[in-house]
Image (cartoon, rainbow, N blue to C red; front, side, top):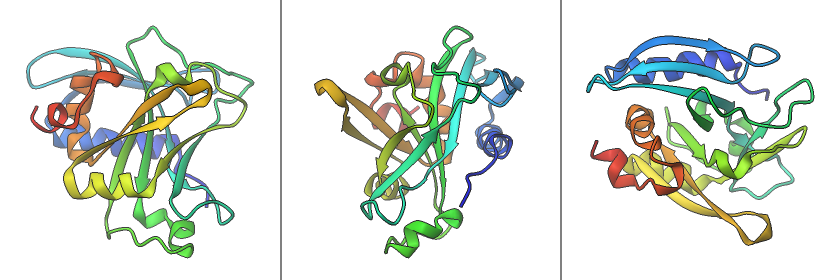
Length: 196
């Protein structure tokens, strides 16, 4: 099943921010194909204004030949681009999961909770350069844990012995994640996001 269009993911992220009383001053797609990154200027309830450069894809199951628990985003930048942009504001690498689209996951035996929506963030510093079609994985259990608890994190092993932190959260914590991430994705802890 193809993923959601970037404009639809942006609409959903916008709705989550508005529900958290965040003011969106501007939001536009940029890049070669005018689809990524999504550049957003927002004002929090504290009147702090911040800029974000957001890369986002639909999270889907890795396919019937993959482990039952393996979900991923497929990073495709288009027109041969192989780098995430940095410089407009805080760069984010996100995935959006909606259980209503999880047909493959269900077919391999996963039973997501009805109406489960989760946002997953990977460390963009660990993905500066991407291939023509790279992927970032997340296990199904972290999606479920985030749904139950609000926010969940895991360490994920990368090549050459490195690791990154994956953060999964329910949509009502998205604004809190944005407020906290400016200090560095790798430093975030669930309590800081949930208690903001």
